[in-house]
Image (tube, rainbow, N blue to C red; front, side, top):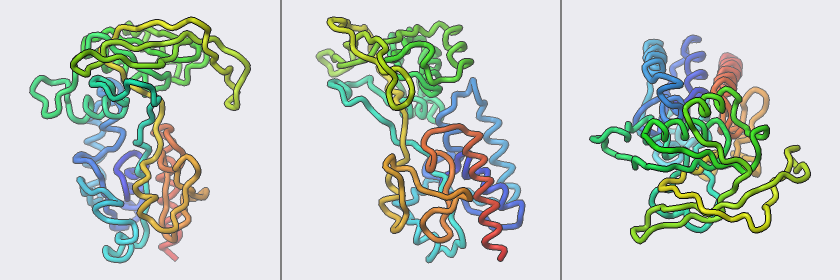
Length: 316
């Protein structure tokens, strides 16, 4: 298994129960993938994840951390030098997207992935943390998905005044309705029909403000949602000292670039059939590495589907 997130853990568990010797390789120092680095403690207590992982170890699953597949070991080496009869890639979609606007390199600009990883996995909010995180006063979270809500609510718990900055309206917010309601209940301020165009820094290179424009909704675009259009002469400054970009993620290209014959789509997602089989013999994939950023449940389902397919192939 490449990756110890929900897809890899589900696949590992099903195969271990069928008697296979299973090894999970995790790039980070702690197993659990997005369950430990992405989802905040108030939504998923880490003790629950730890208990599930201990259960897998009790089944005989070997979990090796600090191993970057594609760098430390290649997929081909797993099959040849290490003798694994099948490989499942559940490496997720951890490559963040940015807006590429002026000022994104100032101190205090984070991707939601980095911010959540440092908060959830590294416990960076503690004063004595090994990788301390900024305790900002005013935060702008750019984006409107579930991850944006998680980042906003974590920033709120650091004591900040938090804005969700989203270029469409409330009806178009992609986050689940209950996540939006929870954010509203906690005092998150929604600045909708608003889009950043530049980030300003102070003389120390730290964020001091974000220039935004007001938007209005025009005709529907290719996604079926009404396309946001800039209102003329609507520029204004939002005073913030931290900006968190939550614009979506894509799969890390490392495995694709180091695995001969592994095909991906234009978005960098691994191409796999309905059973999870990729374009490389005996190499399967599932979860966000195949679909792009989606849900834990879908990733677990893909892992279980691939486990059944691997069992069918190897038992012959």
